[in-house]
Image (cartoon, rainbow, N blue to C red):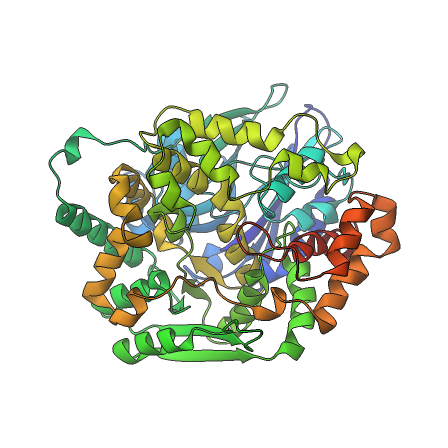
Length: 591
């Protein structure tokens, strides 16, 4: 787990701006506090910040160069099957490290652009092939690891964070009206390839991009599971599916214990993270676990310690319970906004930032339960999708989000994108072949379009702000493929995540399974007052916000007149969503 950066001269002339790459690399120190490296040759420069997790020696340092093969790489993430690949490749190659990074180099040399098909893990890769004069940018199947891209004066720059690209200079920082439309429609989600800024894009998940001089970039999408029923599963009973999912989840958890340092667990007390602890215990691990709670407010519970404590008691983990008072929230918000690669308005971002600070004092790696809701139909709006006709999938999702008409009351006319770009993007994904039912289509859209820029981005940004690697077993590629083929009714059963709940009853205290769904509560960010409210008010009333002129004044006035009267369709505070957007723009020096 690290931060990568680089520049490629794509117009065929000149040398890369090494100074810009050094600035981008320096801006990501928190992602890799254990070391820094730079490399340049020809038309390419690479930078790397290292978090030492596998092969802690200098042999694992990056950028890693193999002069004999004519290859160089900067790599962020973890290849969980690297030991198996190393054994397979050892018949042809000599290895000088025990790192997964070197396996990536050798795998590319053997299999070319299809090398990524052999990698099991989470990764963002910049690989330089000097013999063929090409650069490959690669992102993992579920978009767990980020990779931002900007075109600057005939050069392609890339980095693990958007603020790192800004540190390089020369990036167009005008707001992108379509990105803004996405942000406000989907409660701060801006799916790849767009961002909130016109000059910055994201490499989409499951994509290999090839950069060659004098040619347009060439993208190849290398993975997309089918959300259909398959012949090999014909005749499977509910128990067959439960057994298969349990075994796949066991494998996913075991894969994510690969490390030369201790691996802990973020334990919220919900079903998903509790299952990770149970499956680790099955395999003989008693991990360090971490839970966070806040002050109760206005009838909203601020912690789920009763549930996490039950899991700790059953499995005997080395537990760390963090209690946060209201007076700590406003300073933590400022730090969390500073750590966001893009603005994220969900209240649990600050909770992740705080709990990962505590994690960093004990371990470098944690497993986390992100992705289970998208993969296993855990959200409330999945229930109506389960009973809807296939063509009603778009209508189901529209009920959960803003629509274009809503945005006309929020944005100044000059900032309202023409047409309905968010609705059109949603329709394209939902209507694409490869999904049998409305719920299949909704889950595919959640998992492959929206999720990488919602829960996955939250945990990556906030963990890496403290030099912590977060691994997500529920997004194991084999597990996702299996569950995509699972009959929708088994997933939507029991109010959602039915197949997981059945597995949980075999492993967990019953109160952890049969409980109301929690959402990582941070009451001070759902019922705003005091210093936290002041943050939002100051941002929206600032001269910078007035100059920007994005939001309609009457809309802002109505939010500020009743800070807790406007609730999003998924239960968030609407003032907080737009306040975080403005705070992020100001804190990162944009416009």
